[in-house]
Amino acid sequence: MFRTLEKSIPNTDDSDLSGDDFSLFGRKDSGNLIRPDSSGSGALSQGLQVRFVRRVKGVEVPIEGLVFRAQTAPDGASKSFRSDQDGVIRDPDCEKPSISVAVTLETPRFLVSPGSAPYELFLSLKCGVAQTMIFDEDSEAGQVIAVWQTLVRAEKKLSQSVGVGFWKRQIEMVLSGKGDYYSGDVVNLTQGHHWDVVAHELGHAIYDQAGIGAFGGGQHYIDQCYTGALAFSEGWASFFSAWMNLGLADPDAQFEYMVKRRAPIRFENIPSDVCRKSTN
Ligand SMILES: [Zn+2]
Image (cartoon, rainbow, N blue to C red; front, side, top):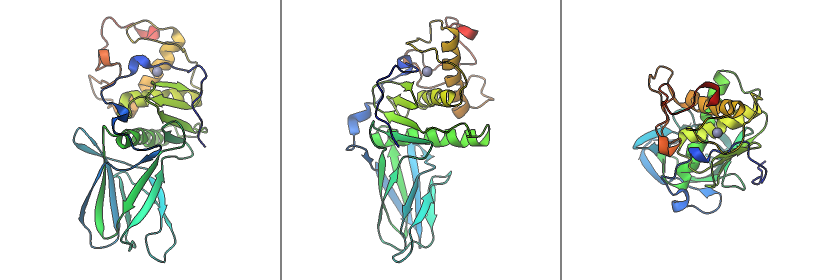
């Protein structure tokens, strides 16, 4: 299920965190349909092999957790597929020259949408060719996939640590471009590739769902002092983002995009003009 955008007062208003380095909808596909930005092919003697990657500053980051069903043999039953941690799906029995599939970017725990139905990723698969499906950082498809990668990573890391028993309600990630904030199981985002901001906003949804604490609410600026509840809810969301993305051994751990005018935000080495402890 998906929800329409809620008009209620957000739990968070993180406009201070947002940046605007890409125009999100400069290369927009239509509605909720997206496709890879490009594809590559290599030799494969038989069967199906597809690798899904998003190019981040020239580095190919595997796309895990893409799930779909497809009939790959002319007279076979349809099978279910899920891209693995290397972003790869395989089927040795695949025989068809072309297979069209749609991947709905939704699971029972989360979905990514433009504000209405979940995004649908359309793919043309081929047997007997090693395919690579490539997403760019600055396309709408690449922005959607970046959010998907954060969600799959969060579910995996939580499963491997505290478990996901608390995660009972579906979280909707909306690439609305209208702000970064969380409100009632819906996360609004301006930029999908802003990994630190996306994970911070998802952190608010996890904090809410797990009943970790109260929300402070309201507009806030990282270089002004916070109330206790605001400091805890904002701090926990940033902790979650750091836990998701950064190494414990990093002596100068930092975010990349969060609060553009102060980026990179450091949290082992806090600037002297930022409030301390329970005030930020
Ligand atoms: Zn926040």
